Length: 221
Image (tube, rainbow, N blue to C red; front, side, top):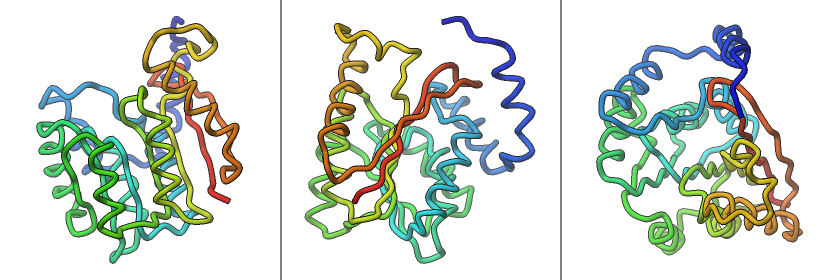
């Protein structure tokens, strides 16, 4: 789908409200310089994550998919000084950039970056007794979204907020016969959301600087 130039213009119009400061700009610049894929959440979406974590009163947060740490910084800033955010990143090079960005933002004391496949890291987090988490953000390989959502539930409590990014895929989720593994992964996650009585959820489609996409928002009952 062709992008409407007004999408970017509207995002730019809202920039003063979104309040992207120097550490966040520096994180995006460092990600670009390191050759990371340009798939960070948008500034508006990042601020939304921050606000949702604050609304949830989160003290402990889990992020599945750190990339270069931009969204990590947004979420970590919503936590109290003694709060904790565990973020998972599969690629060591990305994790290294994320750690530097997090340190530059002055958040190393409340953020732990763990490297490795998330489905290997999540059982270790459970075994260490770090759960329950108050806020969970899922933004990793979409093929495993249903598995990540299952783990988010397992590591949650009643009232935990869960956000899942990139669930519209430029509208490709409408293709029930799709063999795209990312689309199939999102379909499976939605099937789980529909059948899971512990989840109260909604899905919002969005347009903007990142194109046509959307996110799922759920609360554990």
